[in-house]
Length: 607
Image (cartoon, rainbow, N blue to C red; front, side):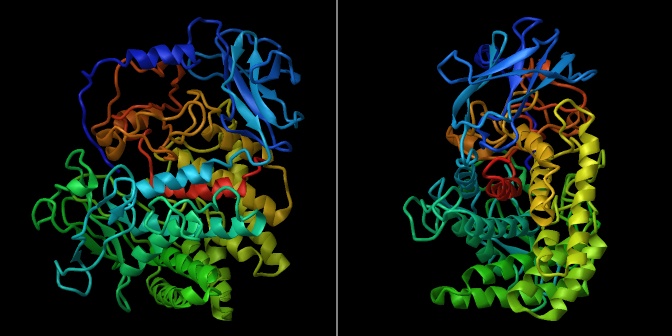
């Protein structure tokens, strides 16, 4: 992730502060009531619980009215949350209007305060997948359709591994990871596999013409359909790059570039970073050897390659499942399956985790888990081949992974427990007997229950630790709740899922949907080079999200415009800034956005 030091002496954004007061982001009086709800909306049968807060006692009742009308469509009593506070706000209440089922566009009212408008509709998240794919295309490397430009055509030259250091290898393509221009198999493999699962779930449960399965761009990401859902086009962009990272038996590369990338803001096609082959020249490509790596001051703590190998195998076996029945694509499907088998075997031989590499800064992806990835890879290979050995492996790895993860923890290493939820349990579930199915669902339940307990620590009932990339954790929690219900038939966590999903859509202290260009108020000053330098906006970027105040204050080179327009809504438990200079809370990530596509398709009916 990009880290850029910027001066605090920039002018105060007076217009932003004025707009915030007008639209209910900054208190204009001590007794003002603030209303927070999903800015997209709710399904007719879904859970609908907004939140009201104030520095004074809240009114006892609220109403829901059609937008543009004062006539109530629903009247209810506020459910006060005793003893709850956030920052300066000491009064909080939940506003439950679940029984309002009539489709339409509405506004919440309490006293003289009004919420941003929202809808009640069959698919309230219908706009999300297409918006998220817009951001994914903006992150493309090699050819970027958003910029209409080629970049990084010299990627790259090898480090470590069987080839002589500096050997040329074709690592063009893939996605830039976040605001910076690095590329990681660690995150890209997960993004690719999750988008393929999203496609399979979408086609299995919904009209092929529905959200997330539209065909608006071609394979290059340029406008104009090609007869393939855009979601598959994007997943294939990842697959084609991943195939390049496995150029031969026993070879797997895991990272292109390192934090030497942090050479200042520039567009991808105007690269200036120097990796030893001249400014804007070739970039380093790291071989996955399962050992500590680092060409500069810092070394990773790698112990194996099973984490990235398992996800690689999952993505390739999923690709085989998607394309094997298309005669035009059978050769591609077979190629993917072969690569998946080979790389899975590498993971089986080198159990452990390959971490990201840094050069001159202490930040890196610190993944330490791997059994969940091997479970997922084995489960998908068993689906693809029917070979019993893969099923046995999947069950063994499932038992090793169990409920391991970040859920219930107050802190965790950066990307230490990754991916943030174990899709392997779900993808294995329908391939095993009832007893084992119950075990898999039970692993999910244990994690969810930990998050229920953690959510009692704030009035929003958001059950994730506010560490770096907390929004990604919320996406994972909501996804796990959705999949748990499908696996078990137990709907008892629908309320938790709804409250956490709606946190991402505006039901949070700051009143921001956490996806750029989505909802009535969303991040507009994101830490992203392309939007900053072009002056254009992009839809669908999931920003990192709020963090403990102590984390924000401890990071190198981070600052914000002063005074903070969202200052009244900050709390030591979590701060968020819609500010270019805050790479901790307002930088978008490619993998978090891809995971949110799956969340949106699974929960497209909102409950």
